[in-house]
Image (cartoon, rainbow, N blue to C red; front, side, top):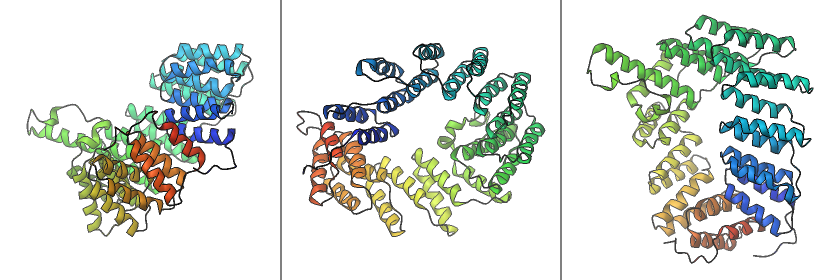
Length: 479
């Protein structure tokens, strides 16, 4: 590769490491760290804070702690960002005692915790049912002069309500307001959830009205909680009335929203069968369907019921509806239901959008139906849509996996003609795709092809690809 006169600096490497951390590619991030140090650049606090934070998010807290403890030897001073990431990591794996000890160490190191540090620890303690300790931390914040926020109080209120301590929650709410902090949509939604769980819908609706009066628009979470509450108590039509109000307020339903509606429609059908004694050994006598299983057990008859209910309640299906439904079925690789939804749309003159095509392409690839997926990619292009890099990655790797090298090269060639950054292509297809699947020779072949077409990645990306290739590779994993 032709050498450039420009050399990557610390900011360049940190940006690359940040990109890999955001994608969850820790191995690549650490290889970039190695290349960085080999090039004579010293990683800084930002570098290590990103790595420690990502390790913690992947629940690799012991590795994160090891890296944290090595920082003094590397000449890097810890800061509140690094400490907070580690404290949050230990809270997430329910090791709040260790998280608390890290706060003490932080103070001993003369590193001042900020409000976010206290919030993550208070949240962890609340989830660990240690409300008393969490309350003491709230008081500690005031003692050290740290400003408490609505988030801090909402964390405590939420856990108190979950434990049925409505009086204590109200006391904390009053304390918050007395300090000049006004409840936000998250604070009020915790009360909506509690009242719905108790079947107190008048009180829950009063909270919704109160929010509107105070100029706080109920969000998707609040509306979904109210729908779920009505559905749980068998008031499915009321749930659809709330759905109508939500859409009128400009909130687009999410996969969770539709999953909840489907769950209650399915459970309603089961209860109806149980009452009619269709079959005492039937599915109707099993436990209620859990939301996590909805897209696995959902039949198309129930999909049609939902669409009909939406029309009945004057909130007809929108493109967002089909986006979510098709994505949900695609995740479970239920191609027949997806095709039925395409037919439903076609009969009503609705043209699939880019999101819908992308879900279908990725589903077909996961079902190893690569030729069919490629046809859909061509259809996307005809409609003026740009397939995403993830779809191209699945196609290229899939064709190679099936021994269809020429098809893979054709797909890659067409990709180079798109308006993607060449480095993005190299990272997604070569590093995240081919190299991770062991197609080393195919990777080097396409890298050469990029150079032939005058579309080479920059020298940092090139160095990363070389670093990812196992030493002494003989291409034995390739066809």
